[in-house]
Length: 358
Image (tube, rainbow, N blue to C red; front, side, top):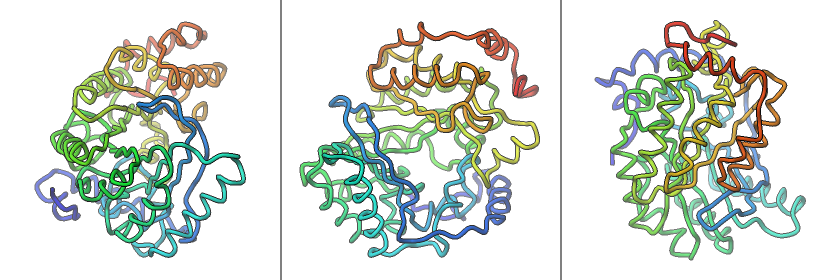
C-alpha cells in the first residue's frame, strides 16, 4: 500500500489549496498536552456482531494523524489535541493505558467486554504507535472479548492485526471512510484515498480473520442537507456490500475547533446536520446486511447536529435506541413541530443557498 507523505497527497491530487488553508488554521493552535494522559476515556454500551456489549473507549494521545500534519480533513480538529513534536514514546503510551484501566476499575465492577482504541489518527501507523506498544496493548487486552482499532486504510496489514487475532481476540479495524463517493471524500473532506483502497483494506483485514467498521460522515462542508442525506444512503449500502465490513457508524459532522468547517460556520456558510436527517438515513438503510449505528456528538448544540432545541434530546434517545435494537419503528414514536421545517430544507436547500435554516 502507499505510504502517506504530504508530497504524495498534494502533487497532482488537487488538494494543495485545502491543505494550505488547513495548515494555516491549525497553526493558530498553541495548546499543549500531557503525553502521559489519554485524550479521553469513557464507558458505554455498543452493538457488535455478537450483540450489545459493555465497552471501554480509549483515545490515546499520540503525536497526531500524519495526514492532519500535512493539512488534513476539513472537519477534523483532533490533531489540535495531540502532543507537540510528532510522537509519544512507548512508556508514556502505556502509562495512558494504565490511566484508562484505572478509570474502568473505578467505574465498573467487571471489565468491559469491548475495547475501542482510537488515536485520532491511525493506531496501526507505527509513527503514532510503535510496534512494541502495539504488541503490549494486544497482550494487555488479550482476555477481553473484542477490540476495535482505528486506522486509515494505508496501514491495515494482516501481520499487524494477527498480533490481536492470534491471541483469540475478536478484532475490528475502524476506518474513517467518510463516504463511498470518491469526489465527496476528496473535495469536501479533503481525504486522499479512494473507495478501492477501503476495499483493499477490508480484504487485508479478512486475511487476518479481522473485520471492519466503516465510519461515515454525514454532511461534510459544501454539501447541502438533501445531497448529504442522499450520499449517506448510497454510502451505507455500498459499504454493506463489501465483504468483511460488518458495521457502519454514521457520524454526523460537528464543528470542531481549528478546522475549515469552523471557519465556514462562523461565516454563516455551514450548519451541522439535522437530527431528523440522521433518523432518515438510519430508517432508510435498516434493511442492509450490516449493523448501522450513529452517535451524534454534541447533539442539541449549535455546533453539533440539532433540530429546534425542543425535541433534540428525545430524538437523540430514539437514535441510541435504534443503535442497540436496530428497529426503525422507534422513529415513529418521535415527532416535533420543527419537522416540516426540516422537510422544507430537504426540498429546497442547495449548495448555492445553504444553510437555509441555522
